[in-house]
Image 1 (spheres, rainbow, N blue to C red):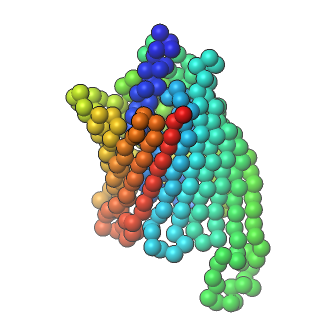
Image 2: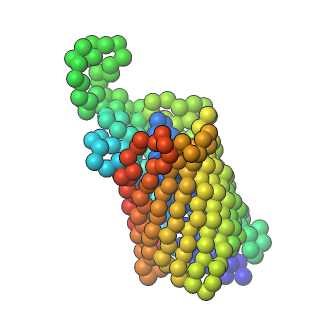
Image 3: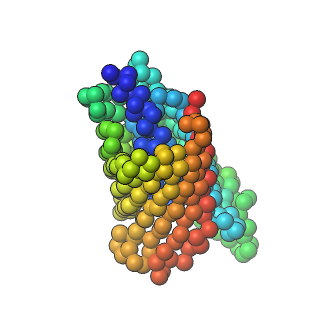
Length: 307
């Protein structure tokens, strides 16, 4: 029965984890914040190491995000996750690697090994505990800057040489899962009391989602996500609709909690799955609100394969 339960959750996993939804704000929050990506619900081990093992196959996940296309030196993000589950050891192993080009001359790279243990509470419920550790590399190259005023070269604040800062990094998280709902919590960057130019401070995540059959062909997955970092608070409200459990479409609303009418974001996502093995997805972001002057031409492309 345990193998059947695990396999059943694995088969459900390809669309259950779609709605777990670390859609943590479709607009990637910069300035030493975590990578907040619209399609991260497909593979979330870089923000919660417990988010593995919902599928009995090995999973390779790639995501590219291109923010404000057409704007010179606009931010770009690449994310690569790999994970696999062992029923014998009730454990998952994984690797997460991300590269975040924040803008002109500044980038960060983070790589971590991921481990999680899965405890079968009952035939219907699984508790997962995860830990990941690795390094964070911050990079700044002043030669990439174009200085219009040559006097700035002699200023005390101008960095004249390349800077590379390597620091250790550690994440911890937990998930409680059933066939039709999931709740989770995690803390990233446990070793960092505060943010610096090249590393992020602690982030706290709390999320929940449901998976509700509407008919033989349609299912809906509502979700709620909250992220807290120092004085930053991000809330996301999401809903995904599945057809035949291989085509999906959804929206995510990320409001400004201080005043939702002044600035918010709406992400529109669509995707499909081939042969229960290959997944493709695309997201387009819309910036809303009377004080939001950011361009909306942000694109996110996802590809994953199970084997």
